[in-house]
Image 1 (cartoon, helix red, strand yellow):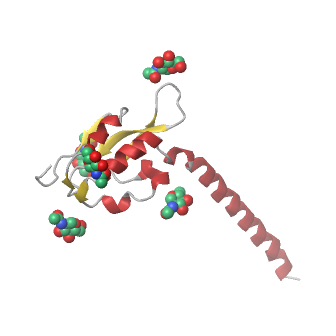
Image 2 (image 1 turned 180 degrees about the vertical axis):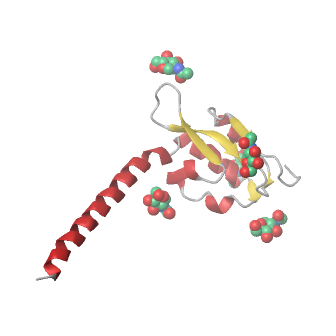
Image 3 (image 1 turned 180 degrees about the horizontal axis):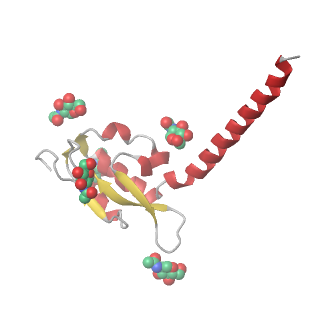
Length: 120
Ligand SMILES: *[C@@H]1O[C@H](CO)[C@@H](O)[C@H](O)[C@H]1NC(C)=O
Ligand SMILES: *[C@@H]1O[C@H](CO)[C@@H](O)[C@H](O)[C@H]1NC(C)=O
Ligand SMILES: *[C@@H]1O[C@H](CO)[C@@H](O)[C@H](O)[C@H]1NC(C)=O
Ligand SMILES: *[C@@H]1O[C@H](CO)[C@@H](O)[C@H](O)[C@H]1NC(C)=O
Ligand SMILES: *[C@@H]1O[C@H](CO)[C@@H](O)[C@H](O)[C@H]1NC(C)=O
């Protein structure tokens, strides 16, 4: 009898928590995907890096706006895709060549590749 009072309480708590988590997920997801062309450019760039601490964190394509060193902005003109606007890989210990593909990040506003080992 005493316990009965607690079961619905816990159920409500769980249900509330589940709703909360779901609303967080559905709010958070759309801003994480970057423009497919930007993704290609970043992947080509990463393919030309021979070493560096970012490579491991650049593995999940579906959240490329959250990759280390990357920040995205909504493209101009009310576009729904998010474009890569900042690429800051300063001091990440990168080596390799800088791919021409970076040129196709046409919404890029800031590129910081300073403080990486020579060989760039
Ligand atoms: C490295 O860059 C060159 C020229 O930009 C490109 O043709 C090549 O596919 C890149 N390599 C990789 C592994 O992506
Ligand atoms: C490549 O990275 C690894 C781990 O980050 C490091 O131990 C190694 O010294 C690096 N190699 C070069 C040539 O920088
Ligand atoms: C990539 O990230 C998404 C969103 O966070 C996640 O749902 C998915 O499981 C991840 N994929 C991998 C292979 O980690
Ligand atoms: C914005 O959209 C208009 C109409 O679709 C187009 O004419 C214009 O070129 C676009 N501007 C940019 C910067 O993409
Ligand atoms: C890039 O990141 C480094 C280290 O996090 C920071 O010191 C530097 O100011 C950043 N560069 C720009 C232009 O924001």
